[in-house]
Figure 1 (tube, rainbow, N blue to C red):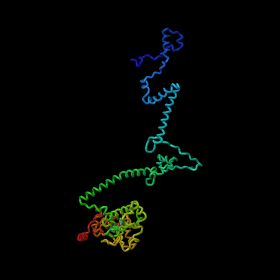
Figure 2: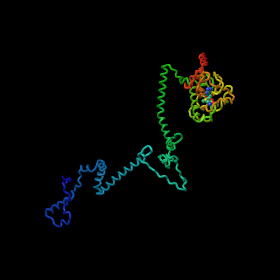
Figure 3: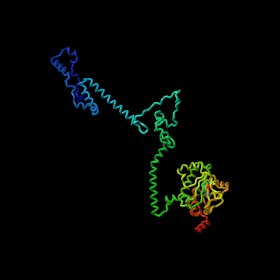
Figure 4: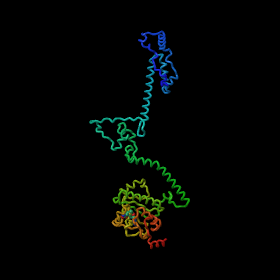
Amino acid sequence: MYKRETGGARPMAIAGRFVRERERLIGMTEAERAWRKQWMQDQILSPNEPRHVPEMYKFRFNIFRRAYKAPLNYLENMLEPVIGKRAHTLRFFTGKIFLLYLAGIGVLYNLKYNQNDWTRLGGFRILENRPAVLPGDSSFPKLSTKSNPSEYGSREGKLEESPSNVNDENVAQEELFNGVPISKLTKTQMKKYKRMLQWQSVKKLKRAKEKLKTRSKKIEAKMLNIDIGPSRKQLKNAKMANSSCKIGVVIDLSFDELMINKDMGKVIKQILRVYTENRRASAPMQLHLTSFIGRCKEEMAKHNGHENWDMHFHESSYLDVFPKDKLVYLSSESDNVITELEQEKVYIIGGLVDHNSHKGVCHQKAVNEGIAHGQLPIGEYFHSVSRKVFTINQVFEILLRVSEGKTFKEAFEMILPKRINMQPTLDNSEDDSNNE
Ligand SMILES: C[S@@+](CC[C@H](N)C(=O)[O-])C[C@H]1O[C@@H](n2cnc3c(N)ncnc32)[C@H](O)[C@@H]1O
């Protein structure tokens, strides 16, 4: 089997050997002369050439090329009778110019509406050279505005340097996070910013869930007849001014210099608990913050709206607010034991978290200032206590419960955590039960 379609025959020129003049001069037979004549006649094209064969046209040009050629063919056919062969040249350039026009429109559109920015990978991006700043120029030497390594890789850094963007309104109105424009955040700040955004998006949902939970708890408690504390309406009326309890409690905030920031934060947290407890009480105590200046005031400022709390804030010392003979400074170091609360007195709690590293500082202060002092009667009821120094809010809550009519023993048991190992003093526990 031959591999070629011609069955092994090699192609040859159909003009035959007489295409060469020398061959013809050698001499030709009659048959050869007739063949040559026929060949010569075959070279003359028919007047209706070139022949248009639709199938052939389809085969050569795909649908897009046919669509592109159709109007041009039409144009050429129209013009040819008028301008002759130039119609073909005109047709050629018309097509190419039209294609160039389309490409130009495409580029302009993409430049205007589809530019590349930091949100996407695609799209045109125009990089401009920075204008040269030479010695003698008014802006020389123009130092880089970048100060962070991350800014050198950031698209925003480059944009910012471009003079056309310096006055850009968007840059001027850029959103800030902790006082820093978003585009200038460091990696860590950006992480915090993203976390904040994420928190904001879930916060509402969380709050709604919490509300639903509290509401269903309230309904459940109502059905089971369980006391869930004062209602909003009751809370609104339970203000210090309306309270039947006139016992004063001062939290003395004059210990700024004895505390590190962390402990100062703890003091403020404990005051928040004190305030919450007092607000929830049916007869709130008369609550004051004295020496409310400096760092403790700054720390408190983090809690929005505290200025509106139902609590008295004084920048001055309690000595300037109350008569000396009404004051009783509470201190675990005092030798005096308080057995009952007096309506006319003002009890001072030291606003100090020191992990007892400044032992007896409040007691010493009271002695120096010549005011009364006293300790809570924990030793009277419990003969062995692992801790005698309590937190600010624990002391306040004990006072509050006693002001509400509870005994000190009951108040200690209610407020102090079970881990403070309290062994009742036999005599007093008996006394107490007798009282009850
Ligand atoms: C954490 S203590 C501060 C301890 C501090 N080292 C001192 O010298 O008072 C906070 C405050 O709670 C009050 N306090 C704590 N335990 C007390 C107790 N057993 N009796 C009376 N007041 C107490 C005091 O007014 C004290 O200043």
